[in-house]
Amino acid sequence: MSRRTFTRAELESFRDAVVPDLLPDAPDQQLKLLFVGINPGLWTAATQTHFAHPGNRFYPALLLGGVITEPVDPADGMSDADRAMMRERGIGISNVVHRATAKASELSAEELREGGVRLTELVARVRPRVVAIAGITAYRTAFGLPKATPGRQPETLDDLWAGAELWVVPNPSGLNAHETVASLAAAYREVAQAAGVV
Image 1 (tube, rainbow, N blue to C red):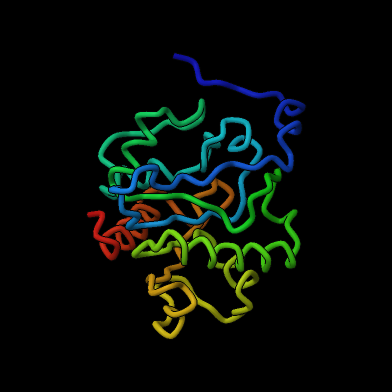
Image 2 (image 1 turned 30 degrees about the vertical axis):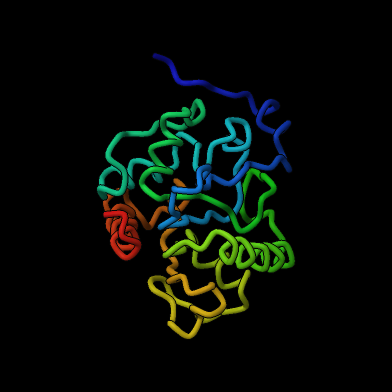
């Protein structure tokens, strides 16, 4: 089966589009782990599926780390069954900034800070056990913490996050050459264990 492709012009038509958060859609579904990307890429906007670019390692890392049990190939758009599986496992996905760009570097510091405020409001509303922000540079800018390091953030921040544990994990973009699927899998499994997903 061939994978869907887009022309550059088609992708550009999705610039500034918004991708809805993946959150529980039933009262009995508990959000255990909220993954947070920096912002949607154009492929993500085109497919309305988070982390959808074929070069993104998010879903392969989740599978390798045992965070999900079935493979997800989001390049054509996540299926209803894929979304249901994520929700049943207590996993949600959001972004710091919701408008789509070709690169995260197109975002201004002000957009990231405003997105940080909206994210803390979302967390207060949906009450995940763990929040995992994928990208240390965006996290530092969004929350005014220039010396923050990856991993579990200080417990002193838990009040800001409505009691949720806050982690900063590596970004799965193919542009993040320092990481492999295996290293991402280890980081994502750690936050999933903290959240009680695995």
